[in-house]
Image (cartoon, rainbow, N blue to C red; front, top):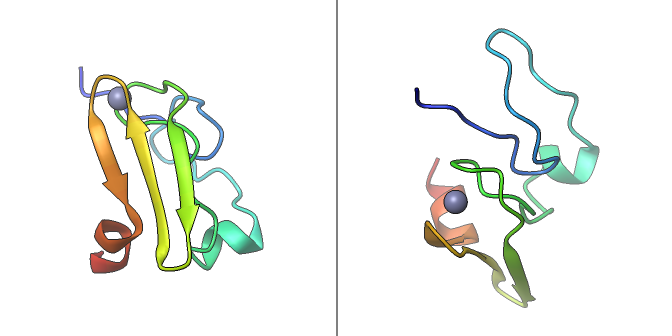
Length: 69
Ligand SMILES: [Zn+2]
């Protein structure tokens, strides 16, 4: 199945239940720490323009992609 994980806690997402997010997360200021596809801990780099996070299996996501949502 297409299981998803909370990128900030690494826990599997339960359909119909939104895990409470901190204010920094809600504002998009906090980089994700875990891959939403597999729940692995990602390597996160923060820079003046935003952040990038790399999953060893799923590659890099960055704040540019997050802002496009
Ligand atoms: Zn992944």
